[in-house]
Length: 233
Image 1: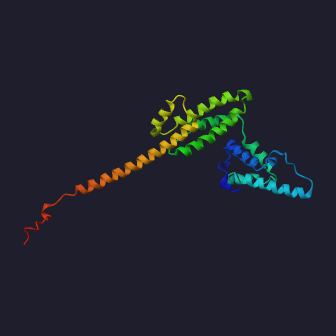
Image 2: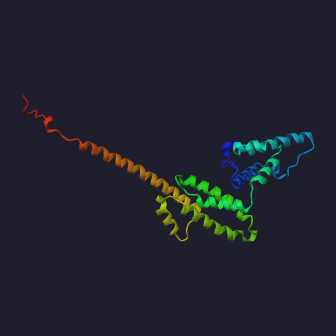
Image 3: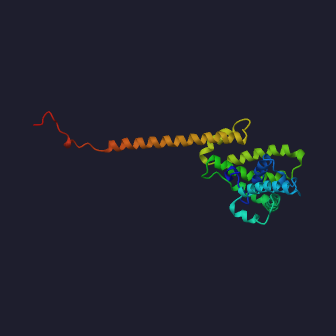
């Protein structure tokens, strides 16, 4: 698999998002047994060769979906499961310090000079990490209610960190009953972003046109340079 097909590459700080993506990909290939250990190493030589070929394929996917500086850390492991277990043990931190850092990152995360799409992508990565930690502590029967509240909080956090030029669009979204989901809000903000870009381009064209005509009109007309051809001898 080409590396560019992995939308998220593991950097050492985005384990939850990367784990979800990688798990879905490997399961889709029918190779998850090489990660969870259900596909055991065969004793028959012919079967062993086939198993090692598949395991090497999973290893190549792991190496292709992580940042280059992390690759050397995995050189001592000979199976995909060993690599996976190492990364999970080291980076899947379920502790108060990790949760505190994520909440601090979320609180400080703003659109800044990013596009709506880039801001949304980074925002989702942070919340995926936070969600994985928070939801692991919630009983299964309580999860739907917690998830509903969580999604509202996530949407509101996203809207409040937009740049000032999106204030009108944000107010319009929040004044609806009910307030749309985060996904609907992002769709409308993308359209608003395009409208603002188009408006800015039209304004630039208008300003340039006015400046051009103003420059032409500012040139004074010197009457001494005008000749009357009917009087000329």
